[in-house]
Image (cartoon, rainbow, N blue to C red; front, side, top):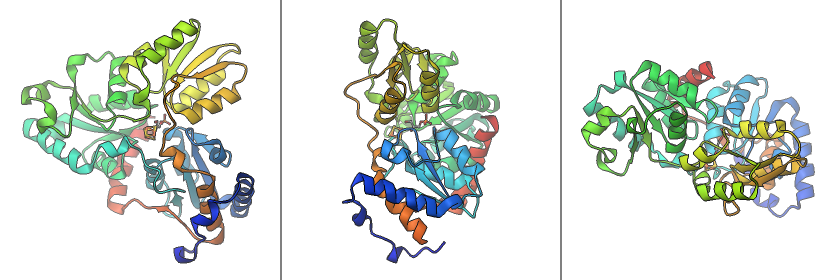
Length: 367
Ligand code: 13P
Ligand code: SF4
């Protein structure tokens, strides 16, 4: 496959096409590419994009698929930047990973910069022997360089579907965990494991010593980075209470990136894949309030028309960065690929790749 970006088709040509034309052209480009391409779609993608996906799923499932299908030389990743980076880290050297819009980031991933994590680690090292006492655990919603940091320091990655197993693994090796960048996934998982409040502290990267005294840091077992998802933080306990009043027999299912007050009021909590599987498997006539991204919930509502499926809040919006991948960007990436031009190629630098892969492999071994 050549990479002559100068002669690639311009994106602007696609932005005025009508949906039917975009659909037809994406289908023909995919057909022309045949087995050379694999389109992956995260559960939060819009319908106009996910309908072209060979596989859809949560972060863990998509990461596994990218590594299992080495026969596909091109992976078009309809998701966000950290997911495409993960696919690049886990894929073979003959594979290229494409993210249809490079602006599809993740606000949570942006809440931990490597300089801040390095500084935190140095601060901890002044108080405890970090390499023997602290396991860094990074949620996959993070830049590749942070995964590399974990690989290099004896740490590991986790996703929303294996956080508990990862935390158990980490505590089995060292007495403390530095968990970043989502404080909620860390706290909700620890709450379910019966970890007491006194054992957890929140590390604010903008305060000296994360906002704590040396004594408090020495006592903590779980150091939670002050970071969150801008979408999931919008779900409030009042949304659950309101739903319960309207539908006393209904069930509430939420993603673990929600605040603990929401998670503690919910009946079930889990990854996007868990949420979809659970509602699909529920008996007809059951009623559900779902606390995760809007595209996923709307699709579930349509697919599961024999059940009543509600979005947990009427005011929360979709994930703005996932939403950046649209039909024009996908069609543009696919047609260029069919012409022999790789656009928006995601490449993790080799140094980071090796360490990040180690952290991901440790996770895969226990997932
Ligand atoms: P899942 O791993 O559950 O798909 O979640 C990814 C994500 O970004 C949730 O906001
Ligand atoms: Fe990131 Fe939140 Fe969007 Fe997930 S929903 S990709 S955590 S901003």
